[in-house]
Amino acid sequence: MHEGYMFLGFLGHEYLPLGYAALTVLILIIFGKIATSNLALVPTGIQNFFEVVLETVLNFMAELMGEKNARKFFPMIATFSLFIFTANLMGVFPGMASATANLNITVACALIVFFTVHISGVREHGFKYLKHFMGPVLWLAPLMFVIEIIGHLARPVSHSLRLFGNIMGEDTLLIILAGMVPFLLPIPIMAFMVFTSLVQTFVFVLLAILYVQGAVEHAH
Image 1 (cartoon, rainbow, N blue to C red):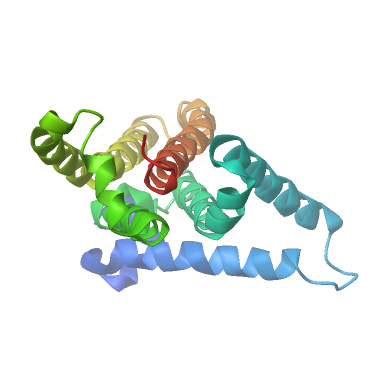
Image 2 (cartoon, helix red, strand yellow; image 1 turned 60 degrees about the vertical axis):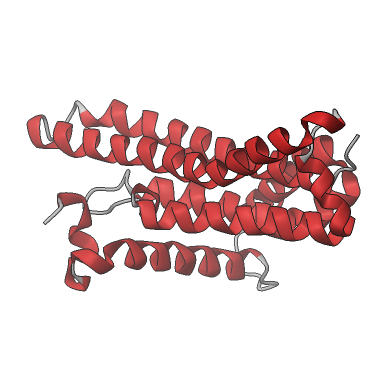
């Protein structure tokens, strides 16, 4: 059995990614409940941390897509930010693995973005949304339509593979190094994985924002 899966090994190999995804969601629910609780026992640092993270995400979205669209799509983007970053970090801990190191999980995330993009585009523009696929030159519209369709269908593929490949590679490298030198060498790798987990989260979220923005903006 994969060494990084021993924590939830009782689930069986085929259900492990779902198990780690569910565990990630459970962790976020617990911390979210703590962060929004008014109990005096709740550390204010936890609440402040979540407020800073979510405010940063909202401000970043507003710079890219405007205040109105940022607030409209904030729930989805904020959820992806928290879920993907937490899932990425799971692989840093011994005996655990990242849910995002499984292609099924990253494809599911990418497909949510894909359908959100096009549903939002149709809602915003109606049938005029097709103009986004036609290009600026009328006589090239049939060719541009085919190219655009292929490009849009390729988005969830690249969107999911990018996240999956990087996180899977990191988890595998950590397991190999931990087996060779179990005490000292993996520590710098673990610290680097925290940074790359943040970077991969940022890349996924940034692409999601740009895809949505491209769908809801008015074609020229």
